[in-house]
Image (tube, rainbow, N blue to C red; front, side, top):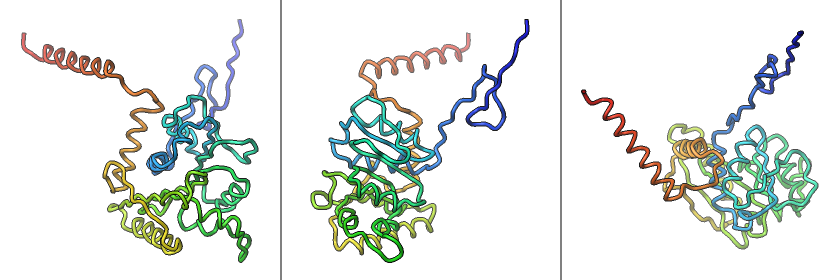
Length: 265
């Protein structure tokens, strides 16, 4: 009998993989700030988004991780569709953390098409959204953008721009997480400078100070956020009292077993 070994290119490695050992797609996190920024966003979104059935998520190379975080947060269990390119069908909201390349143009197009969204972007790019060419301004886009709520992390100089009927400046305050970055003074200063420039351009917009577990160190917040992601994964089910009791009993049994094994005969 003649056996032919077939090979197929693996998705994550350069060399070919035998079909009996297909390469597994790795879920690498490229933007370590993303889990934390998503936590900040999800804390501020209205309940209508929490219960929305049609959500799109796009975070470039971190789309899988971002989708997992949003799916765990929301109440419906239907799968989230990942948004790539042009959105033609009606959706409840798009959550996107795209590359900065052509970001203002993409956000302006979403505004013109009245697509509900939450887009993560540097504060320094906000005023570029309504620009058309070198000197032109799209006043319609500008007026809509100025009425949109922001969720900001000050030391990063980044924020979520939210386009949703329940998240307008006219009916809610801007959510600002006053964070610090002691380990990187240059990053902290640049981020804070971008935040101050934004506040100067808002003509006294209402600001609502926010916090996560009363912590302000951005490094600690990011670390804890990634730890929660790795610990819980996409699990949506919280441990029941029975599960907690079983876990404690198992820990007690393990301690007793180890004590017996270590005791002299």
